[in-house]
Length: 305
Image (cartoon, rainbow, N blue to C red; front, side, top):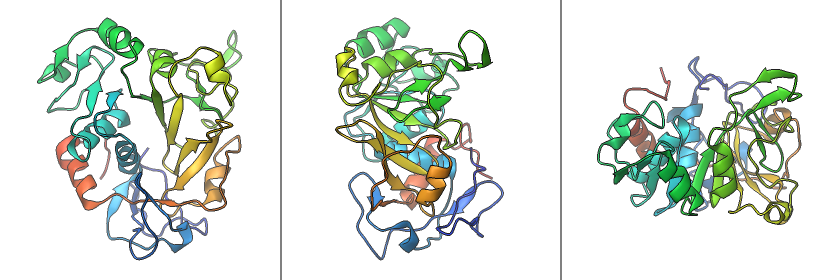
């Protein structure tokens, strides 16, 4: 994940890009304002350079953290979702509660878990229960504000395929399947999709594993699904939100140095492209310091050389 090369507005590789995927931040200071959800109102071409360096993984984790509000109940999986959730707790959302599919509730663990059932999660947790409690009483009970998801294919309405590539009966690739993803997509109040930005991923779904906004507009509501469906898609190139009426994915902000052309080139379907798109606020010293020193000091999920 950390090896994707950041681009400048002209489409050429950043000369300051390192082999490990660490990019030079382009700071939002000096021109334009920053919105409450972490986007600068400047255009990418006007973004100024910063001395900070960060990887694509770190940028994605930080973007996910910024979108978590204080007091939110977050159903997080391992990897980037837990980095985002723990960083939010240590930064601006100390009252956010993290729930794991394995049954650990309101965790305050010192070490990062390797799975959703890792015993490390039991330390200082409000409760150490089971999957029935997490996915039944809490998720089906309507208490989860944010559920993190990923997938092999994501379409323009945020529907996800994690079952197979190709025909279901004779697939080219058989994938792991839903796990708890369908439950989360169907029942959480909001879902955040976090994934690499690749053309094969931003593709129509060969199989609908986890429902997003289905066919758009009010089709999700008509199907009887709870919650608001997908709220954001966070990638290593940009952040998408969804149009309020059509429910189609829309570019919300471009990461520093990334162009619209680069985003669209790495997609098999076309999102809504606003005339003016703000720039994602680069990671701050504080965010990077806490992420590296307090959230993942041993590099369990962050791979930065």
